[in-house]
Image (cartoon, rainbow, N blue to C red; front, side, top):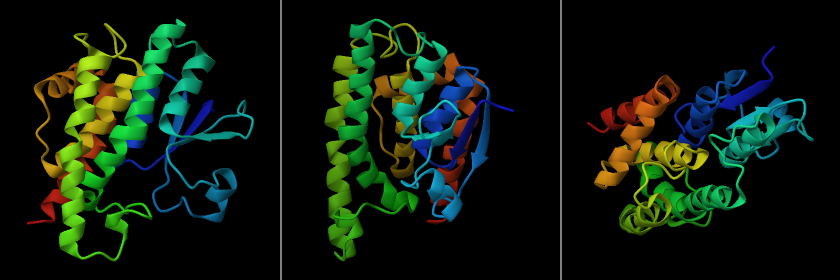
Length: 230
């Protein structure tokens, strides 16, 4: 029996992150598509946050773990995968910083910019979740689109800084998180800067099938959603 049970919803780039990672790392896992099941009593008993991706493993204190970056960090530590998550404290700190900056700053803009186009629910307290009229919601979405450029430039200038990957010569877990996240911008036909296109292409080449298979599910969903607009 596989040591890791991975629960996913395939169209999500958060899920794509871990799906790419476990394949690239060659880990022993069993993947379960839990679309439509995350609010069930059974799932909530295991994951009260009702989130994906979520892994289940016997050595975890609660038997389960969610949040894509935390999952990758844990699995790297558990299996000694220094090629994805360097042991050197300074290099590791840069990987952590890039992931936290993505999740804390870049992804909220991306979600506000893309979720309406993807048909994903937005978060309480945001304009897109409110009773505001369509024009106001679109104005807020456009503001989020315009805000994407600044954090993207931070990734180029600071985290990559002339290197092919945030991890250096080889992809790190921060690179997997970044490349996967950028996939959602196709939903709004966002013109990625050249360096970002190069980074995504380098990730696809470096990780091969491990990247291509999960990416195909995200791209397929985006293609389907866009086809429904015409």
